[in-house]
Figure 1: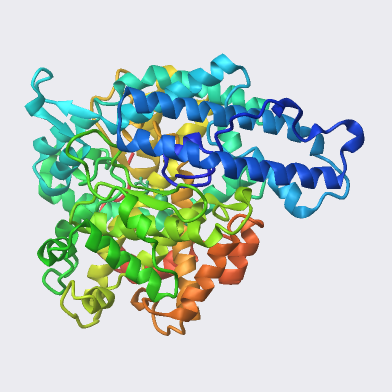
Figure 2 (figure 1 turned 90 degrees about the vertical axis):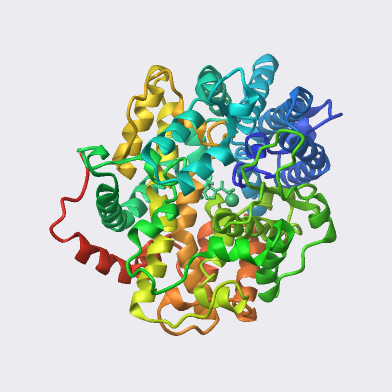
Length: 614
Ligand code: X8Z
Ligand code: ZN
């Protein structure tokens, strides 16, 4: 589970921070009278909150873990209560911290810790106990509703019910228009009942954020990047402008291929219907690779088939991913990781299948929670989750409030950076696919496949929080939630859906909305991972184009990577980025360089086509 809003998936993001019990003097924490407020008192206060945080953290993690791996009313109640205690502790501690805000001579680490204290949860609660309790209950309910979501063709008949995994399989494997539409619409019914809760959730988080001195919840989320919220927003726009032409070229080509496939069922406005992209949220179009493979037959990139044929089970797949990290010189995972993780979907109960990585106690009890199936997407997701796990292990030695990513995009980028080393030669070296010769046609096939995952994701990664920021600051009002959502989907992704109304609450059909996980982190990660990859490849002495580099087995790259992980959030991320890459700015040139061959090819293909959407 995550310890702050900066961490990954976990509900816990919503609920992070320590569950505090037995501390009656919280309102007067630090015993700070006007006289005793000096640098030494601030240091004592910081030491104390770090201790309290560490001491109460395991109980909250356990409550959250149980709520995610045994969804029922009891686990929900216990998780909500644990979260409520944690949020109360944060209310009280932040209040007590105010006297230290401008202590002369305060040391840098203490000052940083006090700043981070305000950012310890993505759902700051009102200090009013009843409203805090209401918020915690809503958060637990939305998460459980998503986790147990099912669509039943015939509501009275259990046999006709399908969960997210089953509905997603239809989208991934079945190119039939109507079957896909049915699966897509089915899943999007599960979030209708969340709308009322979400409206209230936004009100309560805004109230909690205002108490901390932020204008609203969105501004609070944008405050965690060692720059002002306004500067951060401008940064995300700058990065999006850098990559937009690449996305638009890919959109045009895929739209063309879908037009060939579905003819006049495609909308005339140039958008792509969400339900034919092969993915429930149209955030990854890998399923469409066979439709757009540049040079059919030149390469065998069917890793799905290879994994199936390999007979690897979930544990074997995880061991394989672990082997990559240990090949870099990182430690083996503890035995408890294999004993306590949830690798596959239990048959006898509801669980939250959305993949996540958990640090249970800040001292080595790390776990992943997944519903692994033997396919390529899941195989890659394991590498992603282990990135979080190795970050936890690397920074466990730091004070608790520094145990986080340099920013949350770093946390999401670690495993993905490793994934960029899963080149065809790596995959053949581990016996998954036959060895293949490098040639320009093979390169274009590989690039297309990866772009359908990585480039396609970019606008999606940006728009989720464009929506939530506008919801938090009131530009999108509750009666326009769905309409505002689809405007952004169209604007950024060029995706559309017919017949959506305000009866629907389509944002709630994406895990991170009911789970309250900020999402800009993934957008940033998709840019950063290419910067990281380039730096590691340089450290490894790689020459030649970036897309041919795999750092598998390279200790020099591993050492640099590990050194970055060990920094956690103990200093501004710009310094940490500079230590790894030599620059303190996030920058999309690495991803653009990486995909340069594909961009050239796409633009040739698109010549004379009517690109873009209205
Ligand atoms: O949620 C995740 C990870 C857990 S942090 C599986 N991801 C985002 C998503 O699935 O929407 C990874 C990529 C984007
Ligand atoms: Zn993640």
